[in-house]
Image 1 (cartoon, rainbow, N blue to C red):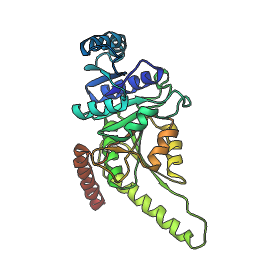
Image 2 (image 1 turned 60 degrees about the vertical axis):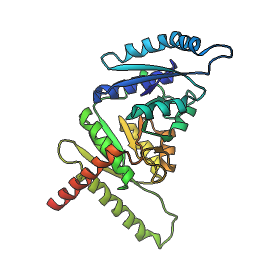
Image 3 (image 1 turned 90 degrees about the vertical axis):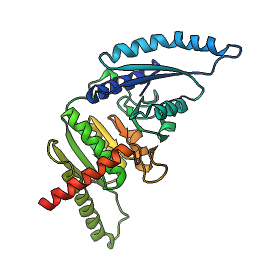
Image 4 (image 1 turned 30 degrees about the vertical axis):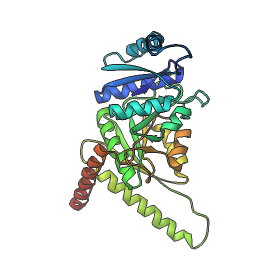
Amino acid sequence: MIGFDGSAESRDALELGGRLARLEAAKVIVVAGFGHSPTGIGEEAFERLLAKDSEPLFAEARRALDGIDVSTLALGTGSPAQALHDVAEAERAEAIVLGSTHRGALGRILPGSVGERLLDGAPCSVVIAPRGFARGEHFGLGVIGVAYDGTEESKIALVEAKRLAVNLDATLRLIGAVAPLSPSPERGPYLGVLREDHHQRLEHGAASIGDGVEVETVLVDGDPAAALAVQGIELDLLLIGSRGYGPLRRTLLGGVSAKVMRTAPCPVWVTARGATHTSARASDLQGAGERSASAR
């Protein structure tokens, strides 16, 4: 699903959503939200008004998404976020693609009010395009990054990242970060233990990928959100998992993911927590990693 209202930011979403759909051979639903019907206009008259006002938007979307199976939907609603949520749930969408707010810096992610609301309970993954994405050359054969710490949520993100890396013929980069500790003599050795633990988790995650994808791991010291944003300079797409609590099959921002969404210079894909179809594949990857580790 792509949210499109004709703004420059929604054209960023249209560009990113189209590129992803072509890679996935996926169908696309372009959704445009309009306000409530004006007072005194009946339902049928309002539907005709929606159809008239939305046609130029949808004509532009179809041109931009040439070659893709596209359907369109114009909604009269006071809450675009709720409308997108409801349609995504009804259509069992894999992802909702949105643009950043116009207030953000060029080349940076800063979700607007619709994105912020969707990122706290969407029934599927949410993908945000950086401002100016449609006017640049940000996406192609390159590097797909995934924030990985060995949790179930990061494993789900890893499954999605692998699938996209295969379709893009891209390198898959697993990124881990060791958060800074308050300085003290007692914590010196503990920091080394933390770093080794993170390193082992990254290696185990990389081993789970199997053959056919070039994999690299990066472990950095410092604030995780800042580290991921810096890595984003070299990435075509960054995937992060939802926080580890809350309803299943929902996208829920935690502290790190929320910061990344505001600072990343590349498109960011936030995976839905506990999505059924990806959880099964995450288990498969875990088994593959254990078999690979045993072989070594």
